[in-house]
Each structure stands twice: as C-alpha cells, then as structure tokens.
Amino acid sequence: MWRASVLTLFPEMFPGPLGISLTGKALTSGIWSLDAHDIREHTTDKHRTVDDTPAGGGAGMVLKPDILARAIDAVADANASEIRPKLLMTPRGAPLTQARVSQLSAGPGVTIVCGRFEGIDERVIAARGLEEVSIGDYVLSGGEIAALALLDACVRLLPGVLGAAASAEDESFSHGLLEYPQYTRPQEFEGQAIPEILTSGDHGKVAAWRKAQAEALTRTRRPDLWAAYQARPKPQKG
Image 1 (cartoon, one colour):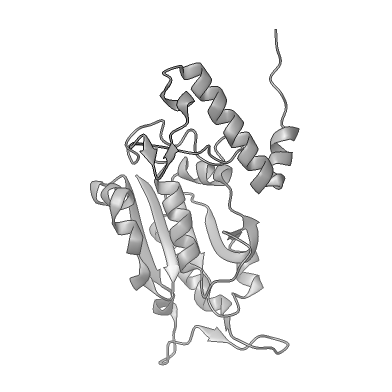
Image 2 (cartoon, one colour; image 1 turned 180 degrees about the horizontal axis):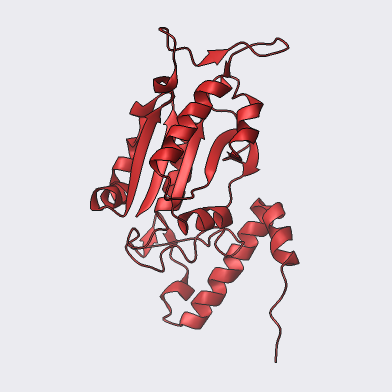
C-alpha cells in the first residue's frame, strides 16, 4: 500500500477532493492510505501556540521549529519501518514535474509538511531533511492545496487506479511534450468536424498526427519544454 502522511494546521481539509472519484475509490479499496496529522497536537502551552514573529523583524509569523520537529518525528516514529521522502510544499521549492511524480508514486509513499503564514523556521528544514517542492510560481495561503495536487498526481499513477494501464502514457509531460488534442462524438459540433485522420482507421497515421500536434503545441505554448525535448539524446539508428 502507498502511504501518505500530511502534517497540517488544518487536518479537516483532508481527504477533501481526494475522497471522491478515482482517488477516493482507490482510498476506500486500500490501494493507498492517507493520514492527516494536526501540528497543534505537538504544542506544550495552554494556547497551543505554533508560530512566532520572524527573527530580524518583518510582517507575518513563522512556524516554530521545535513544534514542527516534534510533529515530523512523531510521524516518522509511527512509520519507522518505511523510508518515505519528506516534502515541504513551498513556492520557493523545486518545481514539481511529472518525472518526480512518477518517482514518488513508485516508492512507498510520502510525508508532506504544509507550511502556513510566512513559512517555517529554516533550521527544521535542514535538520529533518525536508525536500522543498513547488507546484507553480504563485503563492497560496498554505501548503494544503499544493499537497492535494501532489497527492492526486501521484495516486492516479498507482497500479489499479486508472481504468486502463495505458491511460497515462500519452498525457502531457509523459514524453516531454504537451498532450495532443482529443476529440469524441458527435462527428460534427457547431460546424467543426473531428479531423478525418482520426477516423481513418490508419493507426500509423493517427500516431504520426498526434505526435506532430503534441510537438506543435509544446513548441508554441511551452518553449522551455520544447528546448529540453530538442536537447534529448536521439535514438541511434542501425
């Protein structure tokens, strides 16, 4: 079973959307598990204080290292037989990629720390070996929504979650390209027909059309991905 543990100030946000559709069915059937841990449970004062003012001054509050470290250690102790990546959702982290999602889904699971306020004390990041991960160049109110996105991306790749094993093979980023356009019946919609090649029955031509479309979309919309795709080693002939 693939196991996910989330450390958050708002455990009631989980499983949230992960409890419905394919991820929800997989959760119910035991393909994966989710535990949400309340960071406040590891406070020691009567006010259950989890944050303090930034050293050096400035706006906002920072999650305290001692509280968060105790929460991380408690999860680690409860799962001592597993070595799972410890992720911190933060806009300054490394961008989450499909390649990294595939690596995470192939492992035993993840432990995710959801930051709040101005972030968390830098010392706990180093002391607990947290891998900083970002889902985009924007700022959210906390790491919970980012954690939900990461978990959804991982869980859908677990064996038995998608309806067909090949469903994820041609998706965006799977081969370094954005996904090609998709169509379905009716044959004509508001004056626009499905491209004839897709209904030709010629699988070779369909595959070539899809690749060309994926390349064109990637070149136009994501020149960064296109440059990386162009730089990949080409298969040797002969």
